[in-house]
Image (cartoon, rainbow, N blue to C red; front, side, top):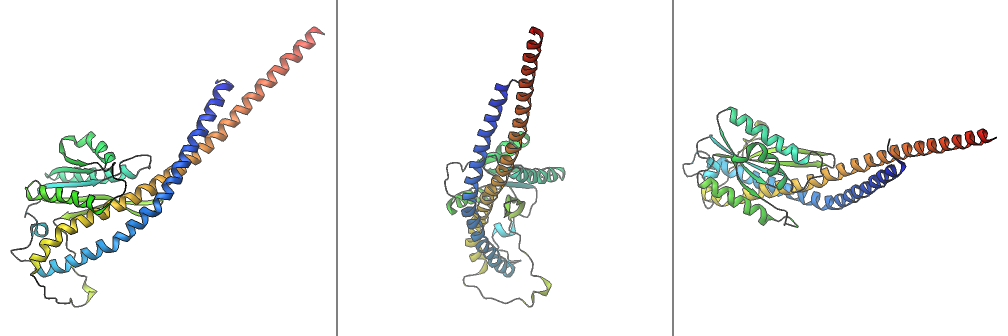
Length: 293
């Protein structure tokens, strides 16, 4: 059985841990609001960009001059998985949930005879994927030095992706990230970004409006598609940022509660042990006094 001194040290250590997790929870809560606002502000722009490109792409469908980012290579053999995770841990299952989704997709594609490559954004995803797919990781981006995410960060990643695509290194690129819903809910998401998936208009949407484009659709798409790729990646980074702080806030809240429960149990054991020792000493004193009498 541990001594009273050891118990006091253990209780003090748990209280110190509780202070740290409480402080981390408060920091995550303060950063979450700004990250959530940024993610929610980016959604309408990304969705509108998607809608505009889908409209133009529908008009350009079947054109022999359609940009390769839209038409694809005509093959489906080599897949690049762009996996975006966090740079830090202590956030529950946030990072592992994204990696799990990417890993499941990779194993499925491999079972179908496809070749899989990984492009990792974020240190935690890289560390986890390296255990199983080290030879298939072609590039990684570390954003630890970035204090505030900007469009330029997504643009740099998009340029690297497009460069590899134009070099013929892959046929299909799928983006993996976590979509923010609430503090307790972040949804791992997979989105194909190359070639762009154009949604067909719904049957009850009514007759489609006809537009005439100047310059031609193919020329417009050539300029819009690379920017749309950067927009979708930027949106994913912002969603991830909000999801990270939401997951960290929830994880640190749970850790703080668990530390409180542990402190109560340790204090109870300490008090019982101390009382037992006092009682034992009293019995020994009384027994000694009776023996002398």
